Length: 246
Image (cartoon, rainbow, N blue to C red):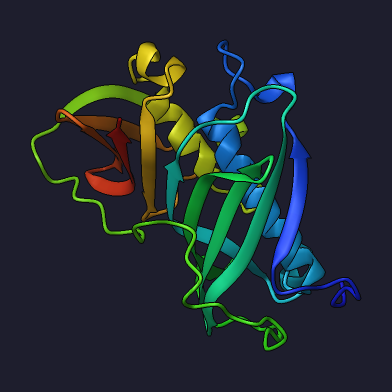
């Protein structure tokens, strides 16, 4: 699609939280929080002419490489949330995008995301084939208190689950959807911590693709205020998640 006449370098989009997105406590699931953030990023790329459909003309897609989410509190069923997004940096094959979620004017979530341009046929990164100079960049306008980082998952850890990749785990780029990794790990967390909204930040590193019928092992390392998960295939790490607790 061409660049929309309504394009702006900072996008605000409203979402209504519906019951399918909520946990039994009536508040937004952490996985659906990440979905809403990513859907807002996708909406901005669409009006800016660098969406998935635009990029597929060149066999390209944006894939998420790192994501940090800082959470003050979660919205509940029926809330109207406003998500704002802008780009901190965009060059060649990579981009850093900021996102904020507000309810009634109060910022409740901040996120920093790192995206890479991926050739869906060659299955490797490459430079963006589309023009992007119309995006104004905001390198100093940060949405989080801390930037994303490389997660240390080499500490003492234990195997907590083994699984195979199913068709329902895959997305339009034909690899495991990034939110699926988060879902797999959160299913192994004490439910009281989830239902009582004890997560104040979560950080994800996406390292290697997983495909249909891959067999993976989920590892866990727990300390007082931090839990680190890693997902491996044939002893190589595909994903790491760090949860920090209140």
